[in-house]
Image 1 (cartoon, helix red, strand yellow):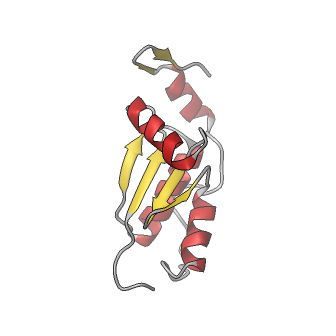
Image 2: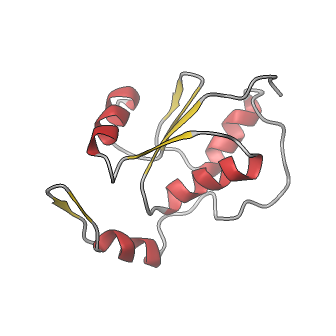
Amino acid sequence: MSESAPQITAYLKTYCGWSEGVRAIFRKYGLAFEEKDIIQNPAFRWEMEQKSGQPLSPCVEVNGTMLADISGEEVEAWMIENGLLQKNDAQPDAPINSACSDEQHARMAGEQVGDIKFFS
């Protein structure tokens, strides 16, 4: 494992199975990260799209490398392959490769951000 902690910026949705899976990996390994909620702040969505070249989330930037449209499972695998983590067999506290649950869709259905109303 590298001696210094990786610099991580995660472009995530407030309520999203995929985004929660990425958060679960960071919790599992005790990794500090900057979260940029693309639902609460549309400027973060624009920033994510400019950096990743595409509109899908989650996107995670690790030490300057952008991992676009990625699951928690894929973030963990990439970080292990690149020597940033050592494999940890502990179970994450949320699914790490899963779409939004019905509950998450219901939460999004009631949210309005700026001029955008979210419907499930």
